[in-house]
Length: 165
Image (cartoon, rainbow, N blue to C red):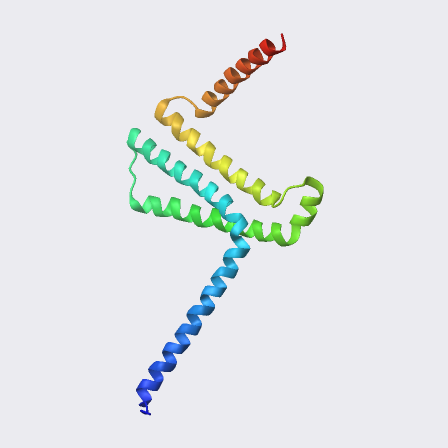
């Protein structure tokens, strides 16, 4: 049986500690992911609207010849992504562990507060997207949507009236 030198023993112990640390971090990451897993689709939805707003903002800056650089993106996009995600996660934790039983009893929805806060954040982004759209095309996207709903409502009313006859 070969004896190990002090350096070899130290390297072996370090490798063993790193393996245990890696395994524990994987377990911790899995645990945290399981806690927040119901919030992930909500976060992705909000982040998609943030990215759409950023894209329309870049288009607007191109069409109205505004100066944009990477610093303005760092000051605008990254803090917004972090702040919105943190807001949703904090509300989600409060909703899951404090409010959910009460809200579910009276309204019948899981994580209603988280969903309402997320909808508010999405409406903020839609408002900004509409401002960008209006600056580019001269017309409000929301006005187009209202007209479409009016046409759809009239079409549906005629369709239902024809079926009832």
